[in-house]
Image (cartoon, rainbow, N blue to C red):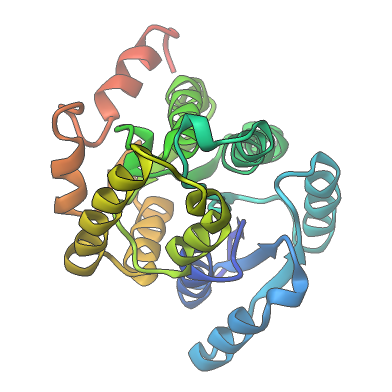
Length: 284
């Protein structure tokens, strides 16, 4: 790019976030990859070296309002306003309502919902003033279809879906595009980390939950093996949303994911909902 845009990506230490940072850097963006813990930047640095690209790595914890403010201030001073925000940072949790403590629920909501809310709120004023910008949030088919043993995670992703669907018409009137990326199964470290972080909770399951979970996890394992996408697959779709002339509101990332949400979604792109409410805001 002759005058590269600045993209900020949250949760870039591994998986989709890492692959997205590499994809944007390859495409010529000034890429700021943020991590909650900079000691975990090794895989990101190695991927950048292997790809022959340069990244700017910053510490930013989306679960901390102070960290968001400080991190965004550093980025803005060094690189100017953020023109593309990729809300990717996420935290999963396995356990039904009875097994989910208030602490587990609040942590899941803090990262997956409040982190997205606060990041979006922080970057939007500069985008509004410029009359341009893109806000892209990675949700999940779990933001459209609730799934057993994922009540807390789905609640957070449903909340992001509702927030962004309500916000998108206003943002569009102000020149800013809002998009949701909704993957189905992805074969990255995220799933393994969720299972590991939830292991103690799941080990205490008693009837009837234990049998239900065993059946559910067995079926889910087959789904990931047969239909799981890679982090690079999702990164390519995020890049498409950032560079398309008229990006969609909603990107369901695979045919398998589309079949999962088909009972609930008629217009997969989500454009008709955004357009209908934007029209009610008066002329552009």
